[in-house]
Image 1 (cartoon, one colour):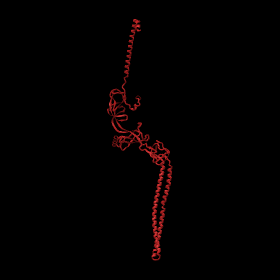
Image 2 (tube, helix red, strand yellow):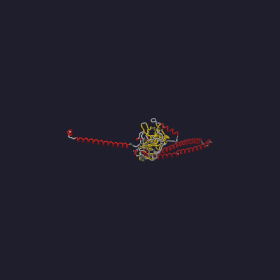
Image 3 (cartoon, helix red, strand yellow):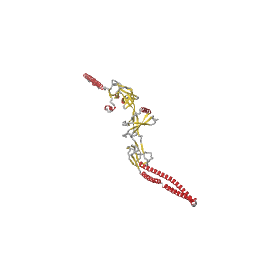
Image 4 (cartoon, helix red, strand yellow):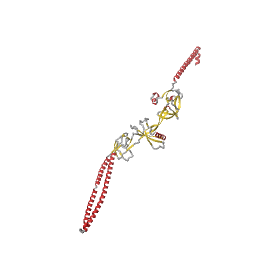
Length: 452
């Protein structure tokens, strides 16, 4: 079909079509060139505008200073003087006079038992004591001894009379003035009276021994019964169970109505004194030997302990080492140290975990930098420093002890070096930066621009 149409066209029409096509092509090329020119101008302007200024970093100048080296150890509080409260007599609990966790003073009543059986024992013991005291009083009166002594005196009187009769009859019989039979009777009476005196003397001695024995026996009974009365009185007192020491009471293990057994293995409750507070921690053999050397060189320089609790808060009261155990643990190679801290507020309880630290060494003229300035790549530690042209350099360092949020630098830096602390992620070795002084972690954490 196209050939048929083209055959019908004139030369003028064909010439006009070619001109139109050429004009359109030239116009398109012109428009494309203009667009390319404009695009090139925009790209150059964007490139010139995208070049950023030198990054801002915060630096810290390395200076020599004195430092206190701390030794820090995991620690735990414990109840060194915990006392278990137990009953001394058997009985049922009638009253419970404290609450778990309450501070109780020494001598404060905690439990009251049923005291009726023990009051009855007191009354019985009092009656027995009075009876024994009556027996003792009767024995001390020595009635039997007095009777025996009276009989002895009567026998002696009879002996005197018999002797007088004999002495009066004997010369008469010798002069035949009296019958010999009368003298024989007087002689027999004298002998009988003498035997009666000896018998009464023996009876008096026997009665004395018996009376002394009765008195001693009665005195023993009185003492025994008085002891029984004292025991019964104590049992009444033991019926009120009091706190043996001052401290915080635990939960009761026997409720009201429960039976208290003096021989029970289970205590009624426990009391923990919280002031002072005891803390235990373990040190290695080398650390213990170092501590002993320092203590020997300066006996007055006992380390002052600081206690940090589980929430990293510092306990306000310093402590001191009191003693250590008598042997090293063979499994761990450590030795337990026991320290005492004042705890007047009684806010710390036994069993809490924390950290104990103390100054183990004082060093002078050491180099220290913020901890966040040190880059750690496996076992290699390095820092970014600035040269005189504020260009970044990477330098390997060797760190020592950490003190707070700073490292002691043993090797790799010298006084006057400028170390990059903030902005480490935005720089590379050889880059030029814009430094400003390091403001510290407390200020940075409050800077909204840092997003921290």
